[in-house]
Image (tube, rainbow, N blue to C red):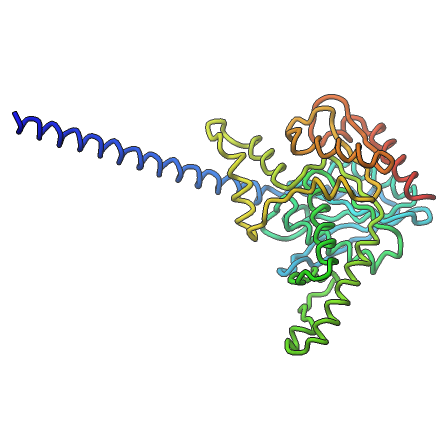
Length: 369
C-alpha cells in the first residue's frame, strides 16, 4: 500500500514538474515572439520605402534653388529647395514633413501651396529629412533624430537667407521634430546644465567640430568662453523663431509610432502598439519617452494648429487633449483650423481652399506685409 502511494506521489510530482516546464517554455516562446515581432516591425517602420520627388514639381516656382546640408555627427546629406519670395520678404517658412513623406507632404498640391506662399512674400525651405526623398541616411526616426536635421537647416537659414523670422511648419511627426528642437535649445540655454551636445554643422562643408575645450581641456577659461559663445548662438537661433504651424501635432513621437504600428500589424499581435515605440527609442540612442504637452501649451509663440474633428489614428489623450489645453491657455495667440469629419493628415487635401484661408489668416495676423 505504501509503495503504491509512493509511486502515485512520484508520478504526481513529475506531472507538476512537466506542467511547470511546459509553462515556462511557452512563456519563453511568447516573449521571443514579442521581441522578434516588435524588432521586425520597428525596423520596417524606420526603414520604410522612400517616396520619390516628382521631377516636374519645380515647374510651379518662379524662383528657387537647390540646397544641401550636412546633418548630425554622421554628416548625413540632406537635399531640398530654397523657394524665393516673389514680394518683399515677410518670413522664412521651414517645412518639416511626416514620417515616410518628403518635402512635398501633400503631394503635388504642396507645390501650388508653396507658390501661393511665395507670392505673399514668404520664402520656403522645403527639404527632405534623413532617409526621405532625395536625402541620404538609412533610417527615419519619427522626429527623434530629425530634430537634428531641423536644427541644421535652421542654423543655415539664419546665415544664408536674411533676418526674417523663422516659421516652423510641421506635418505629423514633423511636429515632434519641431518640438524636440525647441526643447533642446531651451535646455541648452539654461545655466548650469552641461553642454554635452554640439548642434550639427550646417555650413555646407564637411569639417570636424572641435571646441576650444577639446583642444585644451585643462584651460577652464577657454571652456567657459566656448560655452558662453555656444549659449549665445543658441539664444539667437531660438529668438529667430517667430511662429509655429502644426498640422496634426501629438504629444510625442511615440504617438505616431503607435499609430503606424496599429495600421501595419496583424491583429493577433496585439502587443505591438505598446512594444514597438519602446524598441524604436532604444534602437536609436536610448531616447527617453518624450511629452511636449507643457512645451506647446505654454509657449508664447503664435501657433496655428490643424486637426480633424475626429482623428482616425491618434488617440484623444495623445493629441486633442493638448490642443484643447493650448486653446484654453492662449486663445489669443492660437489659430485653430478643424477639418470636419474623420481623418489623419488629410485636412489640406480634403479642402485646400479652407485650409489655405486659415493659413493665410494666421500669417497675415502675425507676419505683417
